[in-house]
Length: 232
Ligand SMILES: CC(C)c1onc(-c2c(Cl)cccc2Cl)c1COc1ccc2cc(-c3cccc(C(=O)O)c3)sc2c1
Image (cartoon, rainbow, N blue to C red; front, top):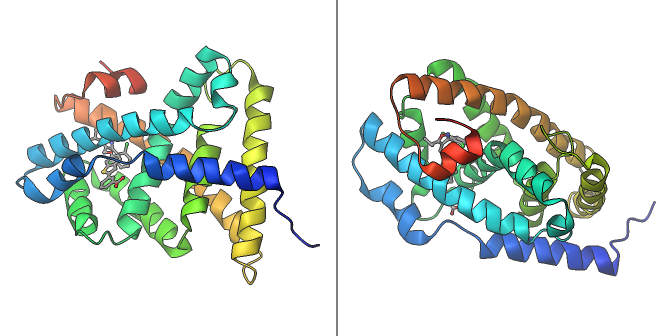
């Protein structure tokens, strides 16, 4: 059937893409990836700084998702805590697959590979990065998929499950339409996008184990990361 994006849906996409573009890691922070030395310690510290900056960016982006600030306050916190790792896997995947002009991509990959993450997590992590890269997502799809991930109703401690579900469905409906319009010859494209969300859940579980092994080697995180990841 003819897929139509309504005026409201076009406004919603614009609001989300503008927020996604407006909130980025500051260039002086991202540039550090290129400058500092290469040691497991230095890489870990840099990635910690990037993740902390990314969480701040994520909070600002989330506040601009239409309807998010109307949710119950405690649910807003529960959604952010529950989705932060997945949103950061998505963001780092987009950076790694975007082949950043300023050389961030190879440097970021190198630093992630040498930051004390055990081999067993490397394979699934870089398989995910590869599968996101192969999708060649448009920025509307990246922004909407991040919003869909944040608005996942079944995160721990979410009370108004239905209110979150309604918001997520609004995003999913416009994402589905965008995928059909932008990938007319790939009827399964939307399904493949959603398949990445399943992979993100698995990576989120691996990540909890990554945190434990870093902590066992006495690695320190920032207060913001400790708060959002319930560590220390
Ligand atoms: C605490 C730290 C050691 C850590 O623990 N787990 C993870 C993690 C790792 Cl390894 C992989 C996936 C997810 C997580 Cl959460 C991390 C590092 O997480 C991050 C998170 C976001 C970003 C965005 C970047 C980035 C670069 C250039 C440009 C841009 C840009 O947005 O322009 C963004 S780098 C970066 C590093």
